[in-house]
Image 1 (cartoon, rainbow, N blue to C red):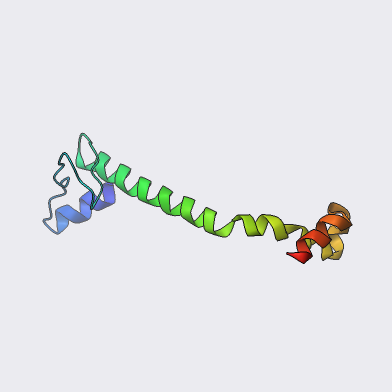
Image 2: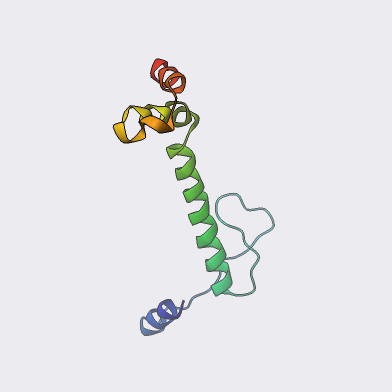
Length: 91
């Protein structure tokens, strides 16, 4: 935040919080004490939501069913039994 405030002061830009209203659906409506706290919360929650969505899309149920196919790799032969490999191959 120090870098942002330094650059903003050099450019003569005031950092302030957006207006908070009672019912807001189009953007973040965070109750914060100051602009720094507001932007920390707004950026962190957006980042966290994006991270969770990425994890859900990368590790879905389909991946869970086909992961035993790793057993076909010679170094992983002992980690999976034949039945789980055959079940994964049939899906």
